[in-house]
Image (tube, rainbow, N blue to C red; front, side):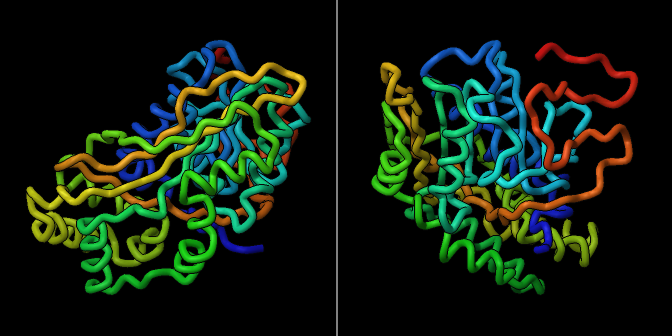
Length: 326
């Protein structure tokens, strides 16, 4: 079994990378072609819960799946029911969820059609499938500067990250490619668009927290310890400077509405791409390894279900906590 590439990254991701992924998740959820309140919605590739939080704010009842146990374990008591699962083999019966959201996960697959097909299978007829990916045009001089400073300090780019960025991420990195994948999967009412999203990252320290919150840095940061990590982060902030976030970073984020052939198509709210505005910053997508894994349960209340059918699964909480309404 391959190692969980996100192991040990949950805390940094939640406190750093979510600075960028949180606002994007809110934008993506807001693009639903219909209100999500009261609907059961799958958060595929849930990570530490950016999309789940956006779904909760919209009144939806989320169920989550991710290949990384560590990412699902972060703040598990406050999270929706979840399962360690491969997006290509979801533990859901056909048509179990009303809608599905896949934020920055399909572009981690060498064969993204397999993940898209599984999302379609799990979603009921006329339900929406919203998906987001980064553009192949994504560039950021400030982000590259952080990486260079980390390398100067001894960090080495992991081979798995190079492989994924080279062979998987570019597949869906254009609007044309995403539209083609959606058409091939049999989606209807497809809308793909690029547009900017202001993620609110305005300070060098925010960019550095975002970037170093990515899993490709996790094992290295653990080795060097918090004091040395803080020294490197401070040095990077000085090197970038107050005006260092002005470089634009173009990103594509398409979304699709899935409607079965026997249903009347509904126009989906425009899928979107985004780039950083002047003085704003946006980073690249993080890689994910997709492979089924069986991992031991959490010790405090078994808050994560593993390879289990989510049909009828209650919203799990630690002992003594009230059950939310889902």
